[in-house]
Length: 307
Ligand code: AMP
Image (tube, rainbow, N blue to C red; front, side, top):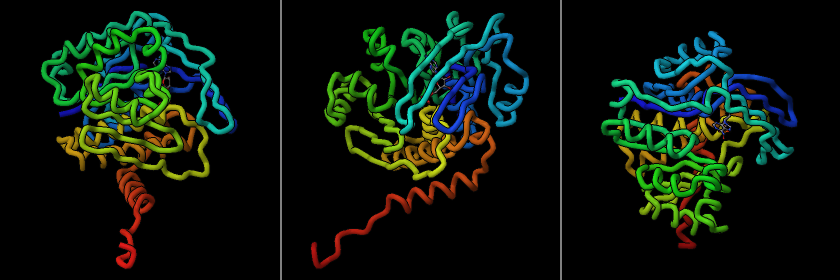
């Protein structure tokens, strides 16, 4: 069992209306692996530079994350700089420095090739497929992507999508990928591209999940003190995949629970800058919030006199 995640490990510089931090630990593989580590074994395949400090490695290892696939190269670690607007739903990327990430060409070890669950972070779709082709027989393959790849590598992305089971993207990426402003129609078109399940992240408005059998919707957890949404999408994906790997099946019921666990992990992540808070939870806290979600979305059936 266990999940293999391929993606960025980064230094993030983030500004929100509530504060700013420079060069803090970030990256898609970082947030994903921390969130998933509460549910199952996680192995990271990524690259960092020789400026990446031991304390970050220790922080990830304390969560039991396997870093044997974290390559260390001479040079600087990937850096991302972003600024969020007042409503925190819109983020402007101010700077992206690929650094050692530019030469990233993942070679999986034997033990990584046999992992049963694979999450392909939003890297170049060519690289996503090169990782997938090295795997012996994964049970479930999920992936993320971003506007840059939709605009610049659409054909390659289409090939990757034809090989994955689960696609986890945000609402604007859904519209752009399907070239359709209506989210429901867009989702239907994307399900014809390959994935049997599409999970659409909608920030503070929650999540919509589409499969051929059903549509499932979940609001986001209402939080008064959101400080920094960076990594919300990746910690969501980590909770979702982590739960599916632990459950060992992806029935409609399991997928719905997985979406809620993903939402739980994202809700913890946004209350602070960086992944420190996400990394310091207990499973009791996670379960308690899952039950809060159940209460949040519960409603009674129609009274008999109106039925
Ligand atoms: P999100 O969950 O969408 O908020 O993801 C935020 C994380 O994505 C940050 O920690 C960044 O380091 C990382 N990131 C931003 N741009 C890229 C990129 N082009 N490639 C890989 N990772 C990125």
